[in-house]
Image (cartoon, rainbow, N blue to C red; front, side, top):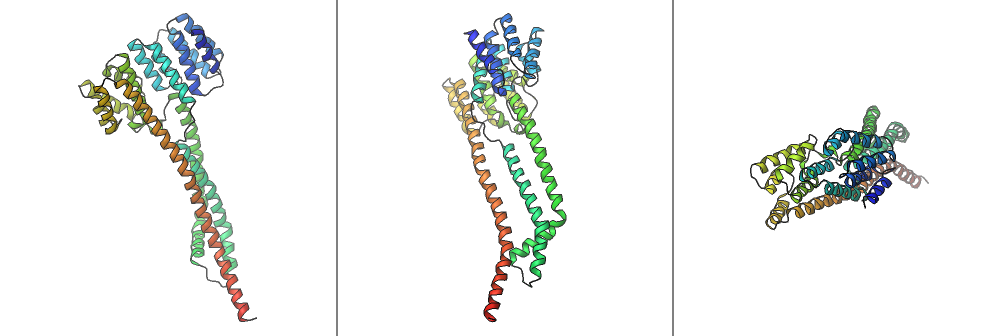
Length: 363
């Protein structure tokens, strides 16, 4: 069984997305954590089957463990090796004597998450909107600077009074002529900048298991906190000890500050659900659900269920936003095009009507 797990891990190790690489490493660690010689051999094999920089990270992990560091500390030291949640689970597993189960559980979670279709993120939607705005701004700049002035000169020669929409378009052109390029360049620069930032954040998302631009909300880390607390209660260590272990591995952020407040309240005898509620991790309805589960001694199951529910709602919310924004962008572009076309054709229709009236008056 151990050999099968190792071969399965090595099979996934090469040319795979980051979560699958991390799941493979966790499976290797789970199968060899009880035997140092087997663990060293399998880690070296995994590194040989991988490409840089992933192989370098594995070898660095092996070197740190050979120097006597605990697995959680070694994994936290190697940059972009494992997600923060996995490192916390490893730390709790070490302190509770269930390290192998913690490693296997995290491998299954990462492998399961990597097989689900990725939902559109808010940053991706913003970049798409900015890209459309950049293209539209370029088209409008061309029309305003090169087309509208000539259009105005042509129709002024016929002595026709412009309709209201056309006058508004001409006024926009007069105002836009001097600032069009100035307005377009920041939009283009902003799009390029956000594309670069998106690339960096996506790398951080893969390596750390979360998106730092949402870390200002404690609610964003709710699934991770609930899974960590579920593992804590299932392994038998106290909530205060589990929270302390999690805080020792979390990067500084607003969520870490709020979790520190939860630790302080629980350490002083407060109920876990009320502490999580006051710190913004769960809602009042979810707090009542945890209270009910506590009375029936199913708190570990309740926290796992609640974490999965929060994840599902979040993904559904992003999917809905992703379905709404593209039609809104199309409607916005269509409205702008409709305004320009109607404003340009109204003088032409008025000219045809005036010529028709003249032909009827003077046949």
